[in-house]
Image (cartoon, rainbow, N blue to C red; front, side, top):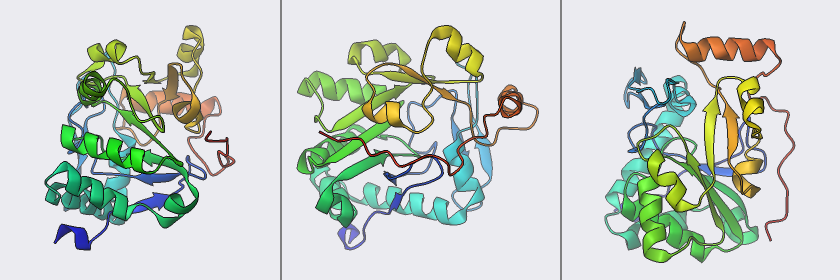
Length: 258
């Protein structure tokens, strides 16, 4: 039975300090992905690039690269996806997620990023997370999403989100045209800090703007990119200017969640 097993959650990584996170297989669960659409084969980890340019820009999903590199990461994300698909109703999905949440989050609260890899793959799954958030008001849930269609549908039906679930619409997807209707902030990946500065945007290196911010913001290209690609050249240029990616240098985010 699906409920005999639990979903796998993780704590911290090179970028996220003091933050729990949950993931699904990249690409396979990303119905809104366009400019970043990347798959790692479930069995072999072989990368499949299926990106289509948005504003002339494509890049490889860094989360898919983690799945390609680390079989344990790939296995955990497929474990999560398979369990969630086995939970057919919204109620079953809610029970599975709630039962699986780390005890530390349930006991004392904290911050949980829903999806480093993956996205909201259908409306029942989206609704399940909203119900879970309502059950655990001391946890601050947050997510980047290109599944803006599902977000817009939920907002239309419920006239709002749980107060402890914060979204950032990720630009470069199938449903960018719906972002303004949601009144939810958005983020876009840029290839250079100069471009960001010219637009007067802040760049988020720690997810702090995703978690606590209310305005649109920028992300800098990161992760391994195809050799010779524009994204790869941009990465190299940024490294020359001092951007090293996400090393273990950031202090934990510890703002009050009130």
